[in-house]
Length: 235
Image (tube, rainbow, N blue to C red; front, top):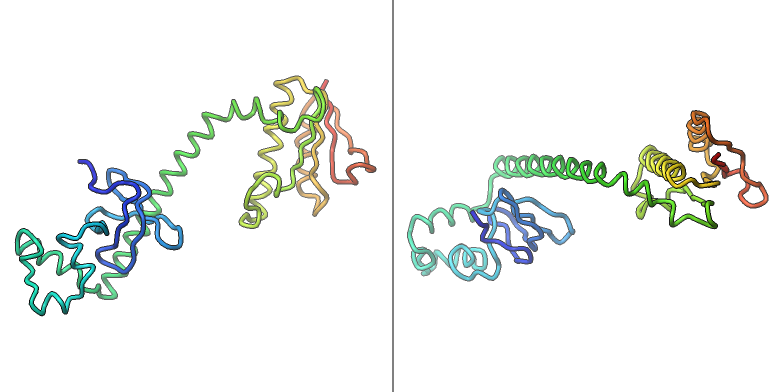
């Protein structure tokens, strides 16, 4: 069944304060981006399109007191049953009901996050080959030679949001991709700039380089890189 909501619709929440703009519509959920920029998955029946001035839309834009002072519910809806249902939904939730609703939304978010992670993993696996084949092109300094800066601020747009472990995993992943590309494209030399820090990244890189039989590696010239880089030569 096609959803009555479309991307770009401005909506309000039926059972709670707030609203936003529809950013995505699936078979089960309508994703609404609120004022904080967070996408919230909602059931279609929990939303009211702000442009709608018929039916439950009026319940949102007028107070209960106004409805009780002369505006009959039947004039808002096609049937008293629908009016009663919408009026019931407009009544503030009890603390227990609000907690239950929030728990339901959290569960929905976790489910959506799990699906997105699985989708991301599939895309990464499908594109790993092409990424590995082309990643060093942007680092070439001369034919057959490349210089790769592994500092996390060169690999991530938001390094401050990463834990040390997450940053380390990104750096090692990029190092391995560059090594794969170097072999695939018969590179002569790749210089990895890993910095000094606590030496954890350098130690792990040297540990992995020792597993290769067809390369030589040395500390890069101190005059140019200090003690924070390693040169890898490919036979």
